[in-house]
Length: 333
Image 1 (tube, rainbow, N blue to C red):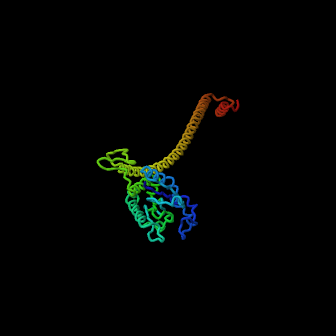
Image 2: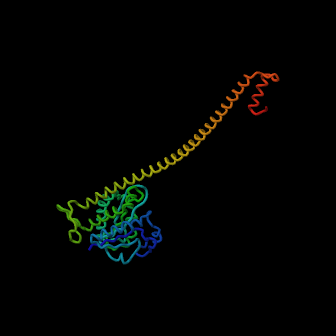
Image 3: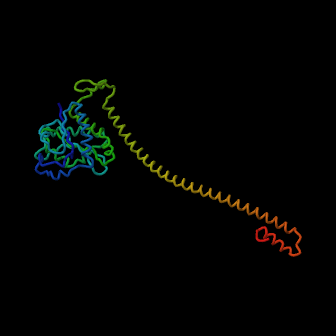
């Protein structure tokens, strides 16, 4: 039965001690190595469980550990040990993998384990980037990766590698943080090829085999279909992100337009109120004017009537007129 050790980088690093480390390492310095933002939670909660379950389904014995030394874990050898990380810094797209440094003394591994670790790294470089859509960058491998402190822990006969899945601050890195299944599947396919696990037999049909039993038959290669769906899903996720941004922009524009509409509605209501008041004032003034015209007409008629009277001996003509007007206005007899 094949065995794989999955070690989650930075997880529980605050509890690291000098146990298992080479003399020139400093556990007090390593305690502060908590990783890039969200790195250890992502690998412990998202990648490790998915990769573990896929390997168990393929009949692989799986062991899990954190970033500290555990004698029960490391006092045995495995067919492969993978240390899970992601990178940070800048916006460049990249993924990397490194076997231990052969030049470090005393050596981390025996020659065969070194060779197997490097063989797995080559398989991963051709498998993982194709599935996740991130370029492999050997030129970005650091001394810290080649002399990774946890290489001190692994058994002398255990092929071991450190993996940087992506740059978490890049565009594709952001996408993969939201799509951990794609990362776990790419790691699984790499490990499966390395361990020689053949769960699909290809002839005129594609058969899925589990523990020697054919459990499904297809006219197409399920791996190809899975990769196709993963690529389509990646495209749709990017399109969804674009549409989500467009909706956000339109929502802001709509809110601004609604605010403008509210102000215009208030202004229009104010104008209607002022218009209605002016209409009422106009009607009142028209009524007052009509009444004044009526009263003036009556006065003119009275004056004409008085002018037609024969002047009295006691009063002159104009005196009679004045007396008549005053009477009409209530100012005397």
